Amino acid sequence: MKFFNTTMLALTISAVGIPATLAHAQSASGNSGTGEAPRASLEMPDLASRSVVDLAPKLDDSEASRDLSFPDGAEMERAFTTRSRSGDATTAPSDELKTAIEGALSGTSAPATEKPGMTEDPAFAEDSRQVFGEDDRVQVTQTKAYPFNTIGQIWSMTKDGQWSICSGTLIGKRTVITAAHCLYNHDEGGWLADYEFYPGLNGQGNAPYGKYGFTDAHILEGYISNYKGFYGSVVPWDLGILILDAPAGDAVGWMGYSAYDPVYALRANIVGYPGDKPVSTMWATNCDIDPGTASVNNFTYLCDTYPGSSGSAVYEFNGDTKERHIIGINIAETSSANVALRLNVPYFRWVNGIASQN
Image (cartoon, rainbow, N blue to C red; front, top):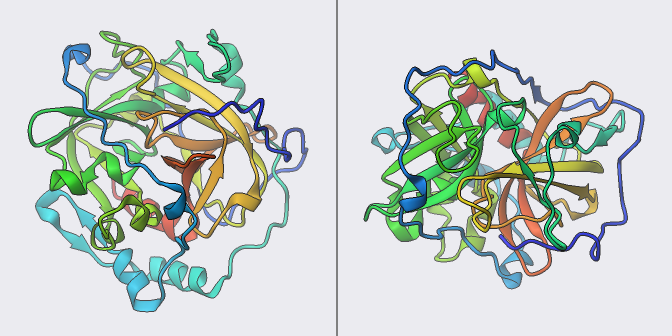
């Protein structure tokens, strides 16, 4: 994704310093883990030698201006059917998820009874910083510190043996939240051939928690069957879950996540693995989110990102409770802003239904 100069294009709204706490419509807590390396062998491949292809989708301005809201009724329930990589199985929405869908279609959501006191994650300040020119991203070198150890690089293999890179965040012992396009590619024939996840990866050869494979992957039916030959047709469904082959979260912990419903102003934090930086290095950025940019399923911002940051969690830090919660997933770019999928109540319940079983 493109990165933007947030000094020149600063948003006019900020939630920094608001002293109240936030009452979320739906929320799942994080966990800091044990901090211990869970594997005897930390061997890893030579990532720098791999052939890497850019599979990050592009969203042009004409697509971004289209109505990307949810469909109606039965079509909405069909789009929320879970498609799983294991046997390409399908799972219909639960009754709880159907209730959330009905609420989204009726336009009802939880009232904003309190305003958040959201700030830049102070963990950023505890790390060494590197700033280059107008780029506002900073390198994270203390990747074994929470919450950075919950964030990892996803390597996805295409059917012809090339690799693409994305970012993902643990939200449970085995559960990684990311973008659907990091797991499934329409131009590559569907599900990608293999996935690897490296939590807390700190450059080539420095994987403090080793490599994890996968047992399954899940995306929304809408990301598959709503595709009309261009990425804009599936932007509302670009959400994915990767299930790891071992409980990495026991060691590194996981991030909390919340329904961003109703929308509110906040200082968003984004941490991932942009492809324009040295191989497999972690970078962080933050910027203000204007709730006026939010649709029912997306919001935009001017945080600096780049391909490889796809799938990064957009998360808030509550200065009062000291909690961190993911409220969106970094998925796309336009010529004027970057785009996140917004964790509204239906998305939250879809994610939580999978995470609670893993």
